[in-house]
Amino acid sequence: MLEDVLLIADKHREAGASIVKEILKRKKPKFIVAISGESGSGKSELTHVVAKEMRKHGIFAKPVHIDNFYNTLPLERTRWRIKNGIEKVVGPGEYKWDEINRVIDDFKNSRHSSMPCVDLVTEQVDTLTTDFNGIDMLIIDGLYAIKTEGVDLAVFIELTYHETKKAQKDRGKEPQNEYRMRVLEQEHRQVQRLKYKADLLVNMDYKLVPAE
Image (cartoon, rainbow, N blue to C red; front, side):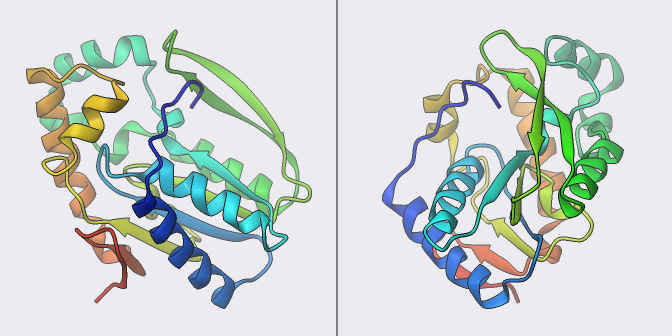
């Protein structure tokens, strides 16, 4: 996302370094990592740290934020959710999974690829074009990222929106009102259902541990 605010702390660097070690153990061509977690849990920060660290090992990693792939435009989403029922529509069904899978296929085949990119200032959706030739690794991050098929390493951040209220406020992407709290609660339910898919967990202390 354009104009996203990253608040990178030591905990992100430490967890990111542990994830990098796991990636290097499992390394193979066109490796795909997915990082899921609730709003404010540090998905974007971890993605940034991991991508930067991989460069030190000669591996080029490209982040793909699946929150860019909503079915509805940002300026229309609130009205659409309220009209159709927040508890009914908020979840993985809001995403263009065919488009996400197309981008992944472009990555695997080293093609040029175009994808949506939300500008958080204007709330407009731009188009980002990238060349996957020479890109060794894809890092998919988002609420439901580990739902993506063909992932080689799935990471799940256990912090819920209850523990990350300050991070959400500091990043200031959306106002904290009744509508937003209802969305966060429904996202919480949907994200937690995906925890079983994880290979690794970032626990409540922000330490990387194997999933049970």
